[in-house]
Length: 185
Image (cartoon, rainbow, N blue to C red; front, top):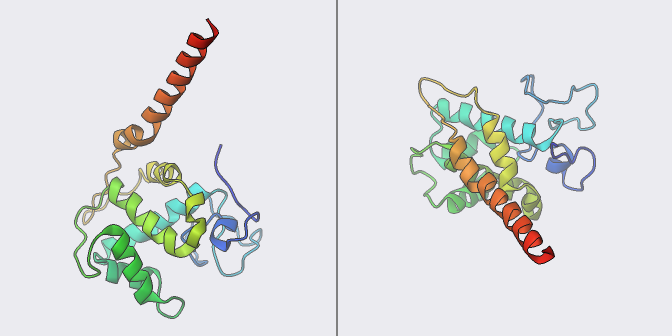
């Protein structure tokens, strides 16, 4: 089942299932709520949080494809000064990623995109960023199978995502049933 906060959260980005707080555009995002049904006049709304994260990632990858390959240039495009404290935003994201704001971003892969997403969600959602789990970001990453350009090859290492989330869950479930059977026998 897909995770949804639609119209049921105090934090706007979650209430819209749009944790990246993308403003309304004519982009035909997957899972986008039609404007005629949307309850927010400024920001996009999505059917579930995974579609919202996917749209955020597509937007970021598009900006990287345009040559925005430093935190400073990427966040300046993503969070313009007219709407944000962009300098503080850049500093926060760079700090979370462990890079300088002007350092060229070269390793664009699923692990980096997960970390970048988390860095942006910390700024956009504040303390509520913890309600979006890494597994939610990972699910959105797997939905990006259609992303590949000549300038940027984003490869989603599905096995890496499985190692991080699915295999530990299966081990936990297996241990639970092993313990249950051992105790009840």
